Image 1 (spheres, rainbow, N blue to C red):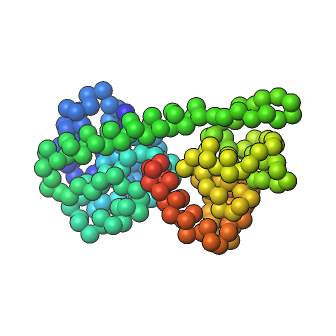
Image 2: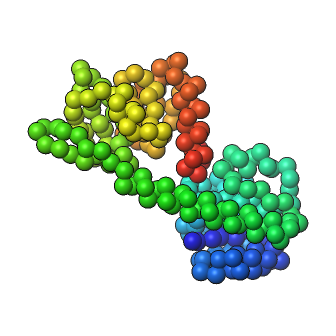
Image 3: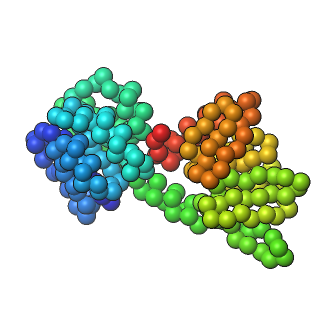
Length: 238
């Protein structure tokens, strides 16, 4: 597990280092005194403990930039400021610790954060392996769920669009919807999209990394709700 600390107070950095080293002696540990220093290093980390009130780039702005390259990281704010707790949710914070904090409380939060990291890794590993088999062109073909951008139905044929190609077979999109699970959604009766590849959306269309599909107005509210749940589930941020 790779852990980063970003705080301008040396005393806090040293305290966090001791606690983390005691709990996870085998973890990779990276320490930064400012948000600019953290972002410049460009390290991929599993867990970040981040102050808010720092010289230069503050913690909230740092978190926004950090999330662009580390959407799955577990983020804990460690700060003397209580007023940013709601903004912390906007960047997918796991917890919000207010200084001065109790040592046992810190240990508890760190343990739960590490469990969250491991759970997310297990989920990602499982998703990499999930697939189903279809019959197309007289042969059977394995389709990995992680590769599906969206599917569409036309004249009893389903066309699966991946980033690399298109696969066509006879089937019912309602059956495919049940098979693919909660990471997919039908914004329109003719389409089934993978939340993973959503770029932007409105009440009329959903733009994906490959192509656009229609949004039925009556499905829009449910789409937004399910998409927010997906983001929370994956630890991602918009």
